[in-house]
Image: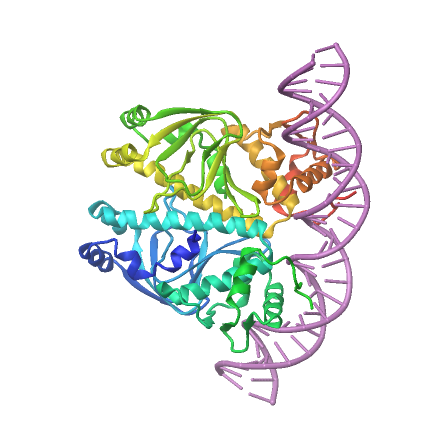
Length: 242
Length: 242
DNA sequence: CGGGACGTTGACGCCCGTCAAGACATGTGG
DNA sequence: CCACATGTCTTGACGGGCGTCAACGTCCCG
């Protein structure tokens, strides 16, 4: 049974919009304002009035929450086809912050125009609905992950998710996985630290599971082992520290 | 800014349904089938076809996911007024399991009838929508919690949430908090173990923050300290082990 | 070339998960 | 009413995973 993340991985923009008829898509594009942001720029700030909804066109964005002491939990990475800032609060306040991980292009929809479109084109409402539902399922999966799985399992799962996303519908076990985000971001996403994440990668490398070297790339050498680690099979055979 | 849990705590059944007009409420009740379950009986099983949506009328239910090795993460407790099994998946499969924590009474709505009602009464759709959105916000809050906060902070936060829920809109700092669920459940909810949760309670007791004794009840003696612990202020003054 | 951002590696300590045993309450049958 | 079984909570002992602090290496950009 695929997780929500895996499900989402197979649903880029085209897939997501194909539930809409051509007219609805045209209307959506029409009321959109284009927004471009360089990496690590802020898009949405938690607590601000939620007057726009954003759709990722290009690049990767992160959604996160902050603790008063400055610590950060990235609750998700968003890819082309994903939406940002879809809230149904009555007070219409963003419930989280978001920023561009890589250089990004967005559609920005003013909320009033979007809600008018909701009434004209029910398919559009259903589209945003399914996004929320997907996010909820993914959030629940990740709760399980954060609470009950070791950092090794989390990192392995992350690598596999990235690999499968890039393989797309082909299902191939690709060799080189591109990791566009910084490891500090990944650590915040996985609920650990950059140091521990790095150590875990090194351990995988030393066990011959992956290959490192080029910045922003990981080579997967041993899929079965990586999958076994992610699944939690493989009883602490070799710790993080050699 | 209140968390989603706190928000939900102030929204029992009446509050939640008051966004509907009388006719919609009547229609909802009309198509509902009553279901009663004793404590620890299963309501929904992850992976089963999602042919019903449930509304909690009385009692407390837990929503959870299981790992293959049997470990469990409770992703939320549901109270009267909350809904269960609202999925917008195209395949219409429950994404989680649920069971009664205490003796429970539910409304059960067959999905087809409910979707017909969605079209007749748009307020009903919006009601279920806002539930999903609430759950998503809560899920994101809890990710932060599980990933970055100590067990002490989590237990303190849980006690405060329960206390505030019982205080309702009064905002009073009530003395005796009823805890209807077993600590094993609470531990699974907080992403820890029953042992550690128990130890944490004992530490609070020894520091004079709470009073224990009667099963299913906790007395809160020192609100400011408990709030400080929950907020993460209070640098490891006295560990769990005396 | 110098400075800053990012990743790597080491050393250290403690939080908390695990195993185990005991305390206490509740239910069940004789 | 008592003996016993069962489920829940408590407490102890122990060890490991991983967070923290610190130093170093590497790459990039002015």
